[in-house]
Image 1 (cartoon, rainbow, N blue to C red):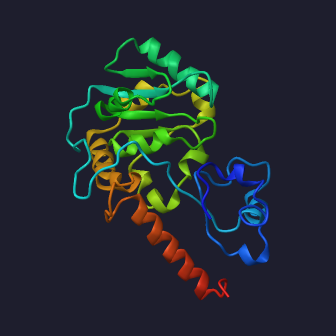
Image 2: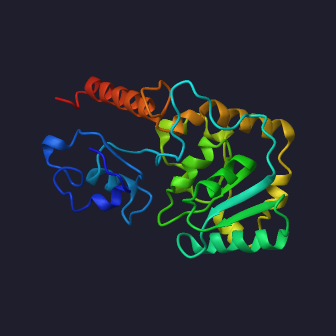
Length: 253
């Protein structure tokens, strides 16, 4: 079963997606989120959403098979960091702290904020000219912007463990070398300076992070046609492997 939103909007779908009947209890569930946004502990939530896995939002890049991403791992980028989004929704303390920090740096080479919803092509293209993309939580901790950043080769900077834990099938085995995770409370309290943090990344580590994203960016875009290595293939292969694992444990009978 698949929901084109976060798993928490599936609660009215009782009997199949949420709190399933026995016949549907072994069905794989995919959504754009996992158990972070719930008052219940994960072990209780998993009983209501068995075999739930989060997947990435589709990025705005949809390549033809064999076409490389619209950026190179050695591309010169104009901005150290950037934020594409608005300051009136989502994790407001983090977003407004980002706004204030960018204004204080007073340099687009250091921080380039793009006000708005990030839906315009010219806004998204800023990511291809930015080294680190700041990714505070949106209406939920899981944002489409994260997929766009990875697809554009912009190193995501996260402020939430829920965001960090999203889509384990897609980046669980390489994200440590492809993202920066900032302690949210320390950042909001002013104990983390983004320029000091991101500007001090050693060149060798920065090169590794950019090469990691370049090697895996295709996993975050849904190609226009059959394209081994894109998000569709990653998802189908992961569901196949999970189904086989369930079958070996006698959960499919």
